[in-house]
Image 1 (tube, rainbow, N blue to C red):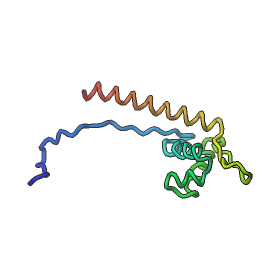
Image 2 (cartoon, rainbow, N blue to C red; image 1 turned 120 degrees about the horizontal axis):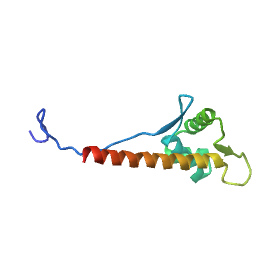
Image 3 (cartoon, rainbow, N blue to C red; image 1 turned 90 degrees about the vertical axis):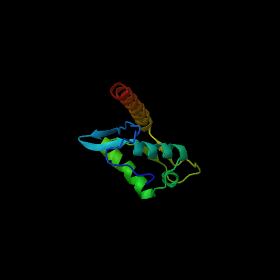
Image 4 (cartoon, helix red, strand yellow; image 1 turned 135 degrees about the vertical axis):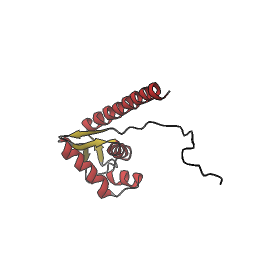
Length: 123
């Protein structure tokens, strides 16, 4: 039969290493790539509502993720401003911008280390 393989028959599938990086505070999840994407969308759009729409998520989900992270980290990540003429109603705090940059750099470092170790072990 075309497309079927017998048990034990080699598929010669190319292996790819994967790694997931996140930060914990007191043993509980505090920050990861998904939250980083949320914060990037808030920074890009200037609005939690627009960020949620851009990500295909509900406002409640995005706001809840931000609030959970702020509680876990013990610091504010997003400043919100109600009313006024400024279309940018939500901004990341300087600390959130640093946290995002450092997290993304750490994630890239870990991926590079993984790729290097994978090449050493699997050729």
